[in-house]
Amino acid sequence: MADQDDARRLLGRARELVGEDNLMLRVEATVAETVYVEERAGELVVHDRGETWGWIVSHPNDEREWDQSQVAKLSAAASVKLVTEEEDGELVRLRLERTVDSSERLADVVTAVADLVDAVFDAHSLAGGWRDPNRW
Image 1 (cartoon, helix red, strand yellow):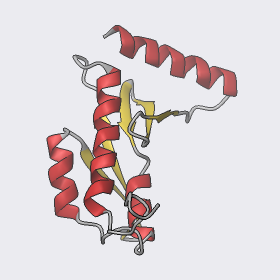
Image 2 (cartoon, one colour):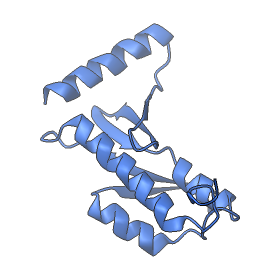
Image 3 (cartoon, one colour):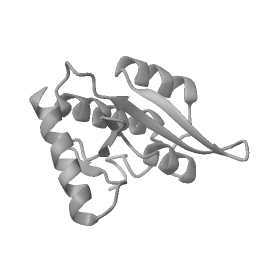
């Protein structure tokens, strides 16, 4: 699609301008969640950089324990993969990630991944946690 070609050109030009190959667009979505767009091997990929998992597992007073089966169900419904990164056999990051299909609009995939991030946070939120409107 034309929007994907535009995004690839934009990312390519930005790489030239900053002189670095590893470049992502950070998107602050309307649901107040952050996702990233990058190009890998000619494909556009939208992901959360593992920030959702990282926040939930590091904030036990605000979030329920990470529920892999719940996240897998939510991710499958959004056509998003769970991508793990390990070091020395230990999980260090879990990304929510979706490759943009050639028939899809980039904006639709950005929205889908951002909505998933929001749903994952909602599924893990504790009463009184930072997402609880009664807390404030």
